[in-house]
Amino acid sequence: MRTPGTDYEFELRLPKREYSEPRNEADYYGAASLIAEKHGLNPLQPPMPRAAWTHFPIPDWMKPQVPYDLYGHRTFAVPKALRPVLIPNLSSEIFMRQYGYRSAFAVGAPFAYALGYSRRRITGSRLVMPEHTLSYIRYSEHSSVTVQKLIRFILNTRDAYSLTVFCLHPDDVRKGLWPKELNKAGIPWVAGAERFDLNALRRMVALMSQFEEVLTNNLGSHIVYGWQLGCNVRFATIGTMHDAASLSGTDLIKNHPLGAKALDVKLSALSSQELDVIGKKYGMVGPALSPEIYAQLASEALGLASLKTNEEMVDLLGWRKISRTWLISKVCTHDRLARAIVRKVRIKLNERTHPKTPS
Image 1 (cartoon, rainbow, N blue to C red):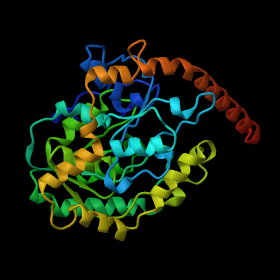
Image 2 (cartoon, rainbow, N blue to C red; image 1 turned 90 degrees about the vertical axis):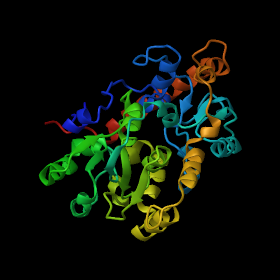
Image 3 (cartoon, rainbow, N blue to C red; image 1 turned 180 degrees about the vertical axis):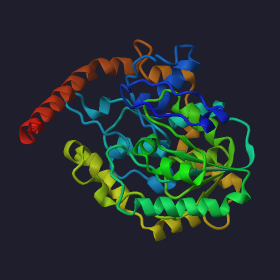
């Protein structure tokens, strides 16, 4: 489903969305498209990525605990030592290699390859990025209270800013709660990144770089992105949109138990008090840290020291024949076939266990 645009997306001159079904994680948010464009290839039709590429940065508060946090695909015929995995920074490379992923390489987070799309800053502006949802996660019973509280906070402080705009996750746009309440309050909003938009990373850099302040009520990659773009990131511990019950009974629980377990921990792990402690530690609540510290935190999370040249990325994505990744991908074909068979068997078993009732 295509996400509707708003007037402010045109006001802010955001790159238009270009939809394409991701073939693997290296396609998420248009990561492979960025490399294709820099290599003189069609960014709307990048070659098939033959390596996974983790789509998020690894900030200090999100140290990986299990390999699933970085690379969720199971292995069948192919030893995981052979699987090409591109990850943000050196510490995550070391972590993955400790678990047997010998073809894990630190290359930087995809966002770092889109930094050339930054725009001129709007003086006195504020971008609000509330805790977002996903299509398979239900809102908690207190979510509407959170929406009202955050909107009241924004209205009470709006006069201190020349412009205040909300950035909503496309799944929040589709669910309708946030757009309805923001429209009623007369607060402009835009839709943020979605993984099947080839221009998503370009859009996020173009959007966030225009604002002096970014306000949020939960942890996420957007904090690192704001630091990298020189935004003043502030934290308001105002409610939550989800809780541990938000995942119960979903397809994620049935089909991806490891991923569901990891996500369940993230949904229920941090209380408002713990979030407030993290906010103070990183200067998002109370006195801010120095710009140099934020630049260093962002650099480490995004893996800026591990960025590769475009020629190196072309090889690591397996776009050049006889490259290491290209050769490994020929072996991995058998593994992809095995995973496809397992998915079909799982669907058949699920249909037998939960037969459709005739209408």
